[in-house]
Length: 195
Image (tube, rainbow, N blue to C red; front, side):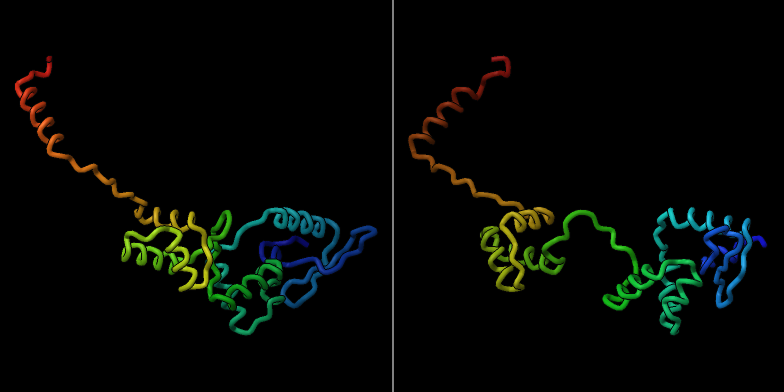
């Protein structure tokens, strides 16, 4: 018996370990008996498929959720699509938690502040341009309960283009300074670039 493309979704239920002359696979609801050559081919094909970890695409995730919402069990869906039940269980749990089944592409440490808190920091900083990062951090903590460091506030404001600027206090010129500068400029007014 040859295993066609439709039987690739089947899985081995039991087989004779001593001689591996015959084995049984479950395909849909039926057990199908396989003999030596077909059983070995099935085992080899399944090892290759199981060794390659592939991410589920969005279409397949939608199919899984649709079947589960129609009342099928996780075991039935896993056997039907040839996907491990643990994968389907995790996908269903994530869908029930936040209604989303797409993959989260994230690397590194999760952000402490949410986008709403970042917006709150930006609005607060723009309202009071003289407030320091430490003050903004305290305001955020009292408003949302999220405790962040001064450095995080500084970084979040930097992302939207708000940087710390210290106003430079100019030394006021005295009357003597003004007179001396005017005299110097009149003296050098007719000079050429070569001089």
